[in-house]
Amino acid sequence: MIPLVMGVLNVTPDSFSDGGRFASFDDAVARGIEMVAEGADIVDIGGESTRPGARPTTVDVELRRVLPVIEALAGRVRISVDTRHVDVARAAVAAGASMINDISASLWPVAAETGAAWIAMHMAGTPADMQRDPSYDDVVGEVRAFLVERAATATGNGVSEVWIDPGFGFGKSVEHNVALLGSIDELVATGFPVVVGTSRKSTLGVLTARSDARAGYGTPGGIAPVPDRFAASIATATWAMTQGVKMVRVHDVRAHVHAARVVAGHITPASGRAA
Image 1 (cartoon, rainbow, N blue to C red):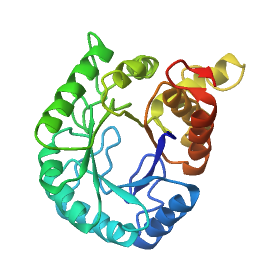
Image 2 (tube, rainbow, N blue to C red):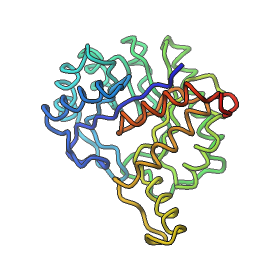
Image 3 (cartoon, rainbow, N blue to C red):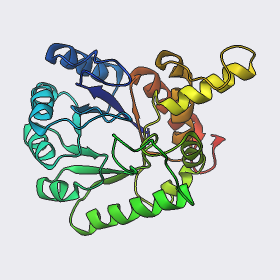
Image 4 (cartoon, one colour):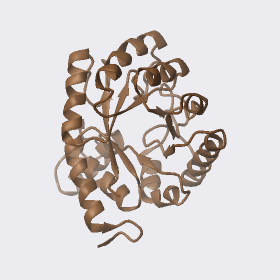
């Protein structure tokens, strides 16, 4: 099975990754159609920025941002709504979304009610405060236990399609993120399908800057800008797919589709060896 590629479509004016390039209806729909042409299996539409330090968006504003875009793209591709609000999730499904991508890991009742798929993501704190001082005794064990509990609750209450996401960058340090990625097979082993979203995140900026410094250029202790995180995005997504991750959430759709097809055609996920 070829791992799925979920394209990120942020319809906000303050996205960390694209600076609000798709905040207008026309630009958002055009990018969604482009993602479909590039091979996206799912387009994930979000109307609230959840970057570190972001302030909450009102439900009314979020609805105005996402519903017209969902309605325009529904029928072309499977649609996911990226939200933590009950009213937005319910309205998005009514408008044509069939998946709820939930950073709060709390919206399984809406999925059970509407028949939508549900992604439970781990987040420590809220976007406004999650990166102030993230701390764990055992980040892999704690994240795994949290997600299994939430996924089992959803499954036990009638949600037929449940995914889990470790939440890279959501209340985790660089070291926490690296530990989770290195042990992603422990999440895969739970039996719930795993989503990984490392694309363009700040941890990759730090790791890229460290790599540059070791190569003799760049600034030690710096962070690479978003455009320089492409290679690390591909590398981490490919690693995750070789470990059995079933879906990657990405900005650069075409390149990740190619990576997914290479992994599916030439790598044995159970062993990581060439097929």
